[in-house]
Every structure is written in C-alpha cells, then in structure tokens.
Amino acid sequence: EVQLVESGGTLVKPGGSLRVSCAASGFSFSDHGMNWVRQAPGKGLEWVAYISSSGNTIYYAHSVEGRFTMSRDIARNSVYLQMSSLTAEDTAVYYCARQVMYVRENQLYYYALDVWGQGTSVTVSS
Amino acid sequence: DIQMTQSPSSLSASVGDTVTITCRASQNILSHLNWYQQKSGKAPNLLISVASTLQRGVPSRFSGSGSGTDFTLTITSLQPEDFATYFCQQSYSPLPYTFGQGTKLEIK
Image 1 (cartoon, chains in turn red, green):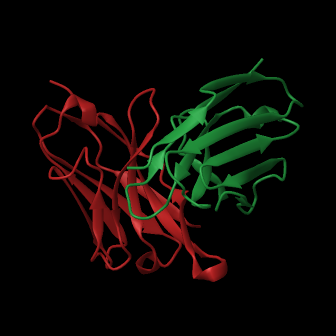
Image 2: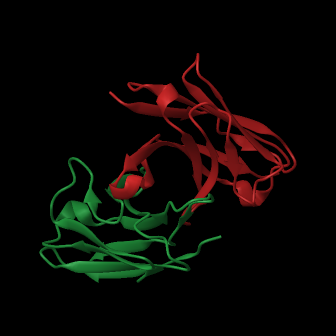
C-alpha cells in the first residue's frame, strides 16, 4: 500500500523550533519529488516546500524561506521539515505529499500531488 | 506568483444536482491545473490532473475542463459522499504552487 505517515507535530512556543517527519512506504521513494503543504485551522491549503527526487533541488514558499529547511533521507524513505523562528501564523496541519509527473503531447511535463499523508498538527502558542 | 481565484466559496446543492466550480488563474497556465477533494478532518485527495484527466478510481460524474486561465470542475448527479471542500491548484513552473481558496459544497 502506498502510504505517507507524518509525525512530530506538537505545541511549541513562539520563536521555537520543531522538526516534522514523513515516512514513505509502498512505492519507489527515490523516484518522486516530495512536498510539504500546510493548512491553518479553518483555512485553505498553502504549499510550503518541495524537494526533488535526488534532493538536489529545494524550493520554499516566500512565507517560510530562511526559517524552514526541507530535507530527505533516501535510506530511511523519509522527508523532513525543520522549522525555526516559529510564529502563530505557522500554526497548521502539515501534510507531506508525493509529486507525480505526467508527460503529455509535445513532451510537456505536468505535475500533481497524488498521495498525501494524514497530516501532523503544529501549534505555536505561549 | 500565480494567483488562483476560485468561485463560489460555498455552494448548497441537493443529491442528484449538477454543480460547477470555477477557478481562474492570474496568468496563462496552459493545462497545469489540478483539482482536489477534501473531506472534513481528512487529507486532500487528487481528483483531476492536467485540467481534465480523472484519477483512477474517481467516479465519472466528476469532470474537469478548461485551459489557459479559466477552468471548471463539474459534478453531475451529486451523491452524499460528494459533499466536501474542493480546491484547485496550479502546477505551472516555476514554483511556488498555489491553491484556490476552496469551495465548500454543502447539502441543501
């Protein structure tokens, strides 16, 4: 079964740090880019970060750049999101999501997030 | 960054109805548009990719159309399990990906 399982979410004080993890199983982990997407309480979805299949390319949302670091461990089939200088605005459920690529006519590449974990809740509060 | 404007933000309908949700991109994104369904307390689920390609296992009452800047998600013959929140997402390079603000589909 293809599965992503997040962990590590908890209550953290403003200005604090936290690392959340995502363990993948049931598919060839090294073939896929991975993403973190978050959802604040009662709000919509916000893409946070992306890491390529090799780990060599990483992108961040403007709102977290310089504070969050995404990484992956091929041996452990896991991705991580190290978060620092946390504020109340970072309170959210954090989902990891597998990226899938489709090739269409004219060799155009399309991407989607086809497998999601159940999410891990991060609350930033004093 | 590309902005995605989704409408309506909420929608009431009855079982058996047909509904349409629209999503507009702030620039041409060709067909780099995906639709997700999210049920309360659950993770999003990919329904449609590349604007109109139904994911395996998704019922055929769901359909997507559009290209460029204007896209639609249509659900025909609504079933009780379809009442959820729907998000569009653009995946046009380069990152960041952006989502629409969501459409909550409720039972009338």
